[in-house]
Length: 396
Image (tube, rainbow, N blue to C red; front, top):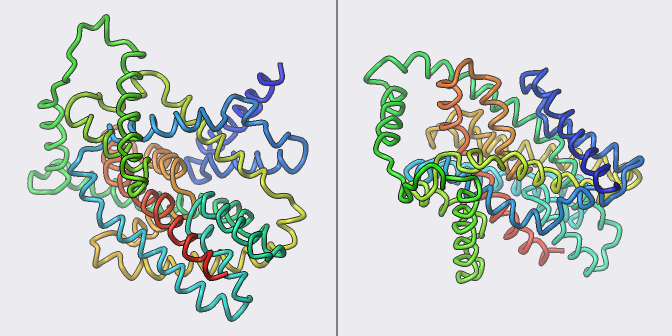
């Protein structure tokens, strides 16, 4: 009975977020509202382990994230993935802007240890926050132990609506571009649409079995095999390339070879289940702090987040034109450092769906925005933030 109650509560929080997002046409992103529901719940009556009680434990997440990333690889082709080197550069240089600006200005306001403890979680995810927390404990700087996790929690809450706003502006620009160019044979829009149709017509499945064998479990088995191979290769490389990145790359390759269909987990009917589970697990991290802890350091957090985001803003806006990207898109790519996957996927798909007026526009928006956001998130959260945290531990 308890696990059903826990599951229902988690799903109700997801539902509230979805409905608010739908009612506001993604002006207020679903994950922002759901995160607020979880924070209020954890700070009042909810048990800290409610997400695990709802069956979304670490084992589920380990499986789910690998399968989801292989699935996301089926939403793009290899050419699109390779073309995202600009997004990687923008995202990483945006993080550099955060580092430089926060270190220079922040140390005039706060002491060195406070600034050093705050920067890694400000430029990445939970792993960076936990690394800094353990480092502060080991160094005996107990007064700052709560800062990294609190920073991680607060910067996401700010990052969600800000990124959604930027993506809406980019989406509106792309809708105009699509409608002006879709019927012009000389436009890049027309060529892109035509090329997608050619690729779709030329795509031949490797396992062209009769329909009675094309079952959901057959799809899931193939995705699991690609995920298993990805994690095995990551193990052979001793983590030189993050396993999540390899899952995405191998998903693209398997899709291009015809081993996996387009949007493969949607066809298997399990995509939303896995995505909700992963989001729930991410939101469960909001239980790591309390109102009292946040209240004692809220001013430090807000000031340092402002400095970090402003540094990111300066870097991304300065570099947008040289890298051939709009300023809104460049800033949004940099902001993926505040949350990473799956939030970058959810924010992007919500905005594309709400801004587009028809399926053609939505597909064009998704093709232009989603790869940049995904790759930017991996470059910052999965790679750069862990490296930054490792370096900053030595500066304590």
